[in-house]
Image (tube, rainbow, N blue to C red):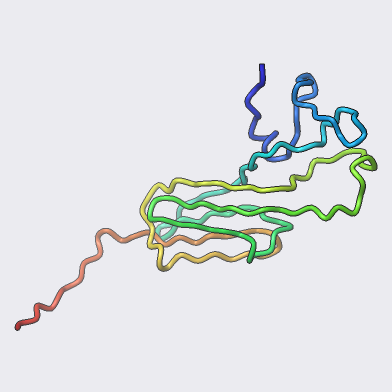
Length: 148
């Protein structure tokens, strides 16, 4: 019976050695634990509150900022991308592989509504930082009534 892949296995692309049904044949016909499944990995994230905003941090090293898709609504954020591997080394030459290559995504439900128009995203040294201003539900303004 196939097991559900753990978060670590999805993140790193690893498989359990005791479950030989997960092993796939490589080009040489030998089973390989280094072959990856066709599923998206989940990003690891830190999410924290300040009095005025919600901040999300995640590592996206190896991905160009233009290749990231960040979609936000008032109550959730979805980050998608793909880390492409440059095949300069033959799969047979690897001794050990842990880096994840391929598509990834993560949808984060937010604890409070945010102002999507003022949200900002920045990337520096592989760290993606999303700054999401909270909606001020207590904010009031006076409307001027126009006459015909």
